[in-house]
Amino acid sequence: MAYKIGWEGVFPAVTTQFKSNFDLDLDATAKVLDGLIRDGVSGLIVCGTVGENTSLSRSEKVAIMETAKSVSRGRVPVIAGIAEFTTQFASEVAKEAARVGVDGVMVMPALVYSSKPHETAAHFRGVAEATDLPVMVYNNPPIYKNDVTPDILASLADCETIVCFKDSSGDTRRFIDTKNMVGDRFVLFAGLDDVVVESVMLGAAGWISGMSNAFPQEGETLFRLAKAGRYEEARALYEWFMPLLHLDARPDLVQCIKLCEEIMGRGSALTRPPRLPLEGADRAHVEAVMDKALKNRPKLPDVGLKSAA
Image (tube, rainbow, N blue to C red; front, side, top):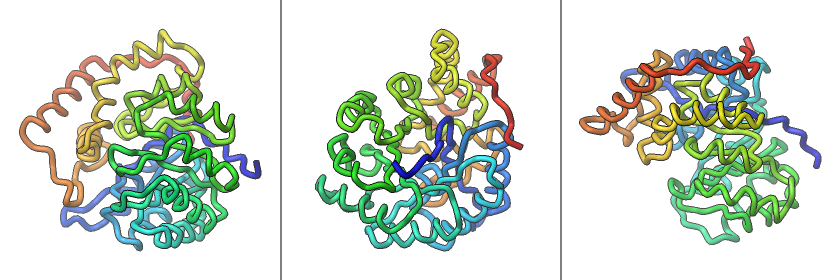
């Protein structure tokens, strides 16, 4: 393979921060990014699902990429999400990402259209051929309706720029099925918070995490414990973390994660419509989960976690 990407560990899917009038707040977004790096995360994903990609204009997406590139200063890899209606639009954003100089792109299936398997594969191939950046294929069938199965992924093995696969299906068997088909051709990433330990056991080299926005040190520690096979310690931390991690598997995951982030003093809970603030029982549930978690917040085992400051 031509690409040695070195992507491993926890890459929070970073939130995008907005002002009270819903304008993009780049200064606040930069603060969030820097705080995560200082707490020792291994990389950053901007303009992903949690970053509200589809609520952003093209120019806003580029501005966020530029901000992340500037803030990271090469301390950690920065990967930009690409979520567009057509292969052409996605390819154009990929070219912008390359111009900005981020370290890679995470490509979602073409949105809105429910594609057939060969069309799904053609979309990823088309975007990958439009850029020299390393490409992560992002599968999230509950949210984006198009399922990138191991068969589809295997059909892309000849495309050199496609180097990584993020699976948010929740079906960890797919990591084994993929390896049985194409060996270690793709770097595998966990994409759903509440199956991360299982995913690492089955070969995931990294974790794109929602809840690590609020708890970056806990996220990175959990991942490293699992990676090191320290399962007893991992299980204890996982049991504490799980009620929070379940929030990443909800349709309103962005609002949940941003509310947790706000409670932790790391960012604002404000989301752009059509995402509206959590109310009533939904908000009370998140607040109760957070309250219990903070009252029982564990002392973290040593996993060599260091700030990248």
